[in-house]
Image (cartoon, rainbow, N blue to C red; front, top):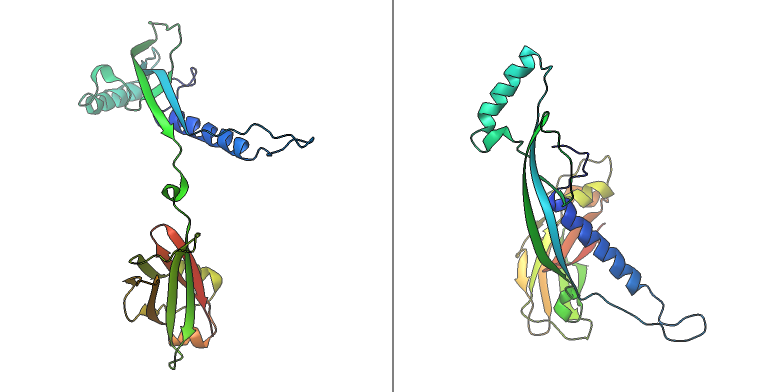
Length: 240
């Protein structure tokens, strides 16, 4: 595919629109509510953006009159493979570009162009589906066994409402633990005794027990536990 006409993939086109939309929304979000004279500024938001693109998909094969026998043999072999999926030996990679008049030298290139219209809408989704932000409060508490900890979790939202029957997930993050203890060899014997998944009660609370590795704990390593409800995540650390 020739790059002289700045051909793009559909992914690049859509991501370019999306990135521009995010930049515009961030700029509007950062506009001050009042100007330097204390007068209210006009504030905008972008709830959605409709787009309608006309693009040209082009399959192109370049030919050369100075091809060596070896090159010609390779071209013939590649043609046999590609002929199963594409006619006229067109390249496997499809690129797109805005429709524009171009001059093609038919003596050196063979092209096949398809013009298409792509329509769609980018919609701004309110964070957390418009509901108050969920908050997770997780606290590790030592038990009579120095290697076992209770992890008490309370789930509520920014309005102070307790979230009952919420599925709380517990995970031991080995990767973060390794990064916090560089150059050390960890045993990774940390496990959950009760369950790694539990639902909150009517008061929005849940508790599980974690048994930390005795060797890692005795050496004072920092162990990272992750607690999440859906896509809301919090981290706690356990250390001697």
